[in-house]
Image 1: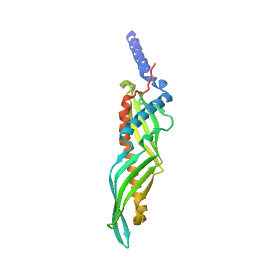
Image 2 (image 1 turned 90 degrees about the vertical axis):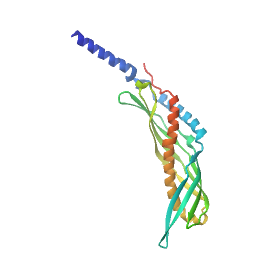
Image 3 (image 1 turned 180 degrees about the horizontal axis):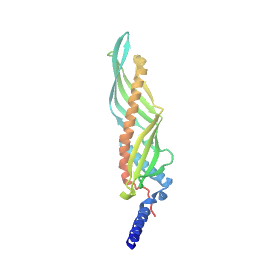
Image 4 (image 1 turned 30 degrees about the vertical axis):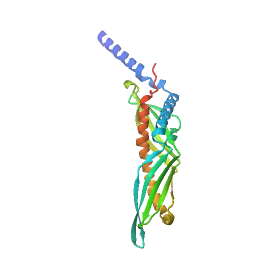
Length: 228
């Protein structure tokens, strides 16, 4: 009987000790601490991007299109080159963080980020029926929202890990062509195709390039978890 009492006491002590170190972590990480942590991360990210990614060099792109005239389908092409994107350093925290504990020990800090205004500019050549001018293509994005989720497991020393960095919404995307001249009547077709390309490239840049910078900067920050 004494053996079982001793075993029960040992197990109870172990559970209390575990809770002492890990179980009460939410009581010692408030929204203010989480906001401060995210703000520090954003500032480090902006400094990193301002050196290498502002402006950001965009990839060249060839976009084919076609138009039927008098029962004959004619094909054209827009070649975009020397593209630049500016505005990535406008990234900021949009509202307070939320704190969530999952799987018993892993703490998650979730936050909405914002970015805008973003501006894109390309030189381009547009050819149709073997004719075409050199033009400039300008794009503007009013606002982008990003969902970020950072986790930390106290049992591994509180090392922060990015679980999610996804573009959620893009608002106010516009495209303007300058210099089309006699091919201005192709504006609707070209605008639709370039808008689609711009949406895809911005999403890729945010979810890969910007995320990579954030992941690099987060290595130098301590997740704000406190214990009794």
